[in-house]
Amino acid sequence: MSEAVAVPATPVALPGRLLRLLPGVALLFALGYAGKVTEALLRDYGKSHHVALPQIEYVLWAIVFGLVVANTVGVAQIFKPGVATYDFWLKAGIVLLGSRFLLGDVLQLGRVSLLLVAIELAVAIAIMTVLGRWFRLKPKLISLLAVGSSICGVSAIIAAKGAIEADDDDATFAIAAILALGAFGLFAYPAIGHLLHLSDKAFGLWAGLAVDNTAEAAAAGAIYSDAAGKVAVLTKSTRNAMIGFVVLGYAVYWAARGQAQTVTSKAAFVWQKFPKFVLGFLLVSLLATLHWFSPPQVTSLANLSRWAFLLTFAGVGLKTDFREIKRQGLRPFVVGALAELTITVVTLGLVFGAAAVFQI
Amino acid sequence: MRGVKRISLDWWAVIAALSAVALIKAGLLPAIGW
Image 1 (cartoon, rainbow over the protein chains, first blue to last red):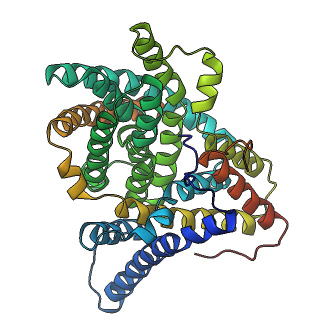
Image 2 (image 1 turned 45 degrees about the horizontal axis):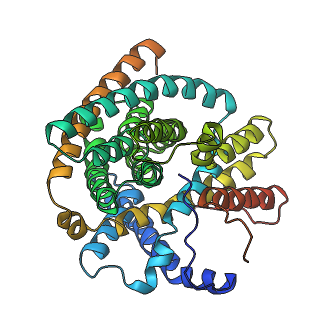
């Protein structure tokens, strides 16, 4: 969650670095905006021709357009630095989304999320560990897959890789598996949610608990509905906040076996891994609760958040290269898929339980 | 910029978002539509 901004080996002045981002950011905007226009065109066509077309959100179009580009012509080198900013737009968008949450709602939903996240973490880590051993994966690869599937996908794997001193190959395997499963989840979860007639809140909770990457969780929620997208982001952020503790647990485990460096300050370690954008989200939510913003200002902040997410969703498609995933081999993917399937069912059970107990 | 501590992506996102919040609050950014 806290990887540093990429800095080239040879120092480049800040204006030069920002200039290098422009082509990729323009591509993100073009694909995202094309998604928004496509949604509007289909809606208008359906209305004017009295045809009942399925309501497909701009989110899905932006992702599909990105997937098509990435898996056909590919992303040219000139676009890559800018496309990599999709994670920046995601986090900025989440901070701005705080304007649409009153702190009371955050605390109420956060309490339910926290309980479910704690259960999800334990179940996900246990399942991934058992399956990884069963399939005889390398122990550190199992740790990376467990961290990736239990918390927040790629960022968590990168954080854990450094802490437990895992091989580059293991991290690449784990990231490929998590990305492939995330891409599948994007399309599968909303479809299952509609089949089961889940409420917006219940689906948002489920997506936030079960989808591994924050961008994919936000996208899956937003594909379902705007309200579900908000809940998915909040639940996923609660899950992300646990990253420091879980990675610390693995770092201590591997250090005790003499296969990683000893963690000297545990508090500093947890703070270093803590996703800081969660603090920004809470601050903006607090300001909204104190009525610091006028209603038109809240609308502007919410819309700015949607524009930031628009760039994120285009980036989700662009970064998913199925050829690269195929090159990484099948075994880690099979382990990940089996574990994710189990986590999907368990988290769905948790959401049904929470819906009955907390009336969500 | 040797010796200057690199700021993480998370902090950049927070700084950018809070700057936008301040600009909107101060009325320096026009109403943002969708």
